[in-house]
Length: 444
Picture 1 (tube, rainbow, N blue to C red):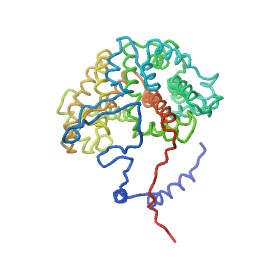
Picture 2 (tube, rainbow, N blue to C red):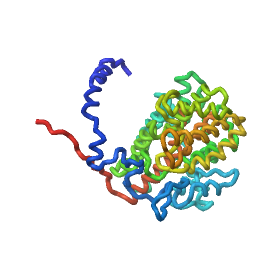
Picture 3 (cartoon, rainbow, N blue to C red):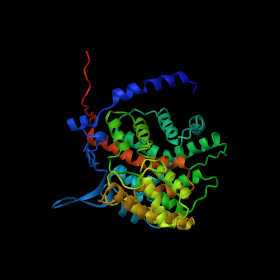
């Protein structure tokens, strides 16, 4: 982009005006009974819709009120733990779970095979798309690269704006199949042009799972172990959907309700997910862990680890924000079910990768951090690790570059977005138009 120093200076000069005129005090929110960020003072989300797609459980109704409980995550009436435990040792679950979320029912063996074959046939991009679109303007921000590709794919679709649920199903399935390619090819283009590394573009194989294809396309030698693919498959299943109340899913439903096309709706969801307050949490955990590894001399010394974490909570070290990343969740109370399920797979991979020492450090932090947070923040309901605490560690063991951490989240969540887009079209069919109370001061 051309040098625009004049515009930078102009914008800086207007900063004070924006801060002065765009600040809204907490007292006004309280006066009008409006919740910032659609969250009440206890962090509970304001009810904005109904869904049949998924459910989060973090409290149980008791005779004397609500009691915190171990978290549960349900997809279309099935506990995610049950879905994962039902898989055979060599079986991958992404495709079966995607079918469940999209169509509301578990597929028969024949339906599952057919759906996997459909995805396999759809793992293609338009002629020269990789060269002309993905490689044309490589970016370290792979989410931006993917979003540009998604919007460009709309121009290759003769029925981009054609209404109808069947057309939407077609487009969603095509995007679910394309997402791993958009992510991996976007990374390779960046790595080649910006980091001066070798360029290689591997074609996906129609008979492989989503997890297998991702690893196959990413690695120079195409090689991966069944354990590696299995752990990645579980990660994708756990990140596929989360209750409908998250920012990117709500974005999907809002823009879908306006009648926009599938590509625009998914691009909007991508723009939401890439925000560091939403999809980049595991990257922050990895940055924190790098800092801990550099500053704690003996990782097996529980007291030394605890002392450093205490300094972190006091804002003295790392990013000085007083947070231990990967601990606690906006919705879950006692535990994040995704973390509990994922942990056993993390342990298996750590053993296979000879990362026992690293795993022990994670385990120590998992034990010590909740105690410290309870003491220093006076949170007594309990604080537990969330799924992001371990997901970055898994991606690191799989040699997945950090630039692909949030895109991996998108590769999973495109399924949930698609399910909610379909439900919005079929079950709601009314534009979402929220109300805002004006607190503007009238001037003469």
